Figure 1 (cartoon, helix red, strand yellow):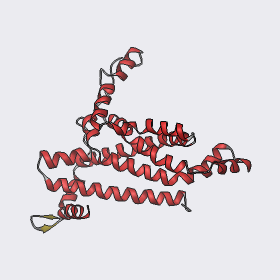
Figure 2 (cartoon, rainbow, N blue to C red):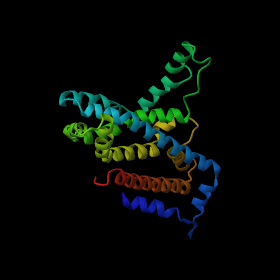
Figure 3 (tube, rainbow, N blue to C red):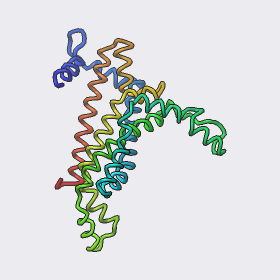
Figure 4 (tube, rainbow, N blue to C red):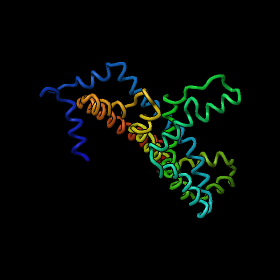
Length: 253
């Protein structure tokens, strides 16, 4: 794993047998490339936030159930992982299309006059990626939340704390490790995902589809390596920031 990464990053600093930063300078000077990078970051960040907002209460609810019911709920939660990304994406294409279920319902109820352009937009990619990675967030959080002793909440409430205060001061700090792991998995997965953005994004490019286009269609392996190196750096930066946030939110964790 290490050798291919080192060779890929190393190759970006050499062009025509001379050391250069031209590949990176060209990338960050080109408005089209920057738009792709910003779109990718936007999609990844929003997908991560949505997965946290939806995953945390779901995981907390599942973690408080009896073992048998917990197993059933977990099986339902991770069911999307058992189907192909292609199948999931085509399902969302049917739902989000101009003649799909959502637009038919909106037009039929008189909410809109004409179908909305949902498919082949960043919003469509976010919806597909949320469906894809939400189970990872739920699994990461359930493993942490189910090990939090319920007596801690009772003790906090007996000392005068409200249920919300007890949750904020007791449960949330203890759940930070699972939250960070889930957020990293979702963000990195969204950043590097190819199939879902390619099918639901249409002409909307993200880094992964842009990398594939340069490598396989345009045969520009140098620029593809530059893009891959940028993805690797972003991943390490995000992991470092997440760990820093975890230590700030839970210093004793």
